[in-house]
Image (cartoon, rainbow, N blue to C red):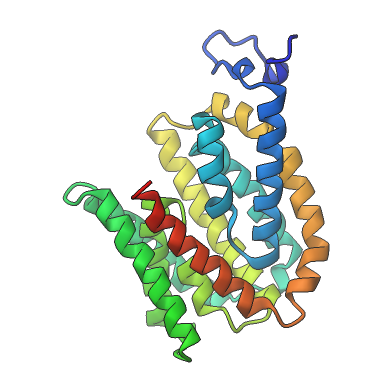
Length: 260
């Protein structure tokens, strides 16, 4: 196997499979580093994998998005949910999931009538507005109407821009780090399963995408292990600051994508 054959190890016997051998060792290493950083961020703060990894991976090789990166995120959220399951806000999670499902359905309808670029820019502005409100001292509490709204906004943004974390994170920004990470991980776990099912129905996720997703696992596991130390740093009074920083970056990136 030559220098361009790292993924050929994953079962090249299927003639109909994606030509994974096109991914070189260098690309494999870069993808691992990207996933490592993204998974460390999400495991430390509660979100950020899609924000950081997806835009870079799609430049490296478009086949990484959406199926393989979603599957990698699914594995990570399963690990995080198990690690801090004791801190999950089950009440908040239930209503946020209802909102998420509704938001995903609305996004599918909106696709039919409005240009997606305008919608993504609008919601990027919403994120920045939410951060500004937080800095101004206006706080949103995790009560039913707010959770439904945040879940719906997350579903819409996740569908259009692959960045669904900030609306939920802003609600829980003053909660303990474990509460944010576990609740959001559970939220993403269910949402990602729904998204992967939709991709499977559409013929966009199957064995070939699973094969490519496997190459991301080493970086993901490394990030998860590293987060055992980084969460300790974040939880020393930096949780709110970290959430607002990543949320701001999300809003800026979402808007910037539409112009560059």
